[in-house]
Length: 112
Image (cartoon, rainbow, N blue to C red):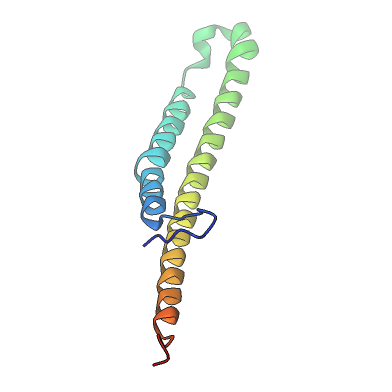
């Protein structure tokens, strides 16, 4: 139920819920999958570069991949939290709308 206020502001709880579902079902899993892919890249054999080159390139690369993977995992969690908060907001907005409608319905109309 959306009711425009005089300045045209509207909130559509259904749209908020759909957006939260997209975050939960698509965005967060995709980011999580990407984090796992980055993490799996970190398992390469540093000796493939040779001893000298491994110390120059492979070790810093492993450190960087570990940091990127951790950040992506954190991002996935934050997206999931945002989806949860968005769903809560939609529910509260619907509840508030219903409570306000009920309050207006209890007002006598026409002096009755």
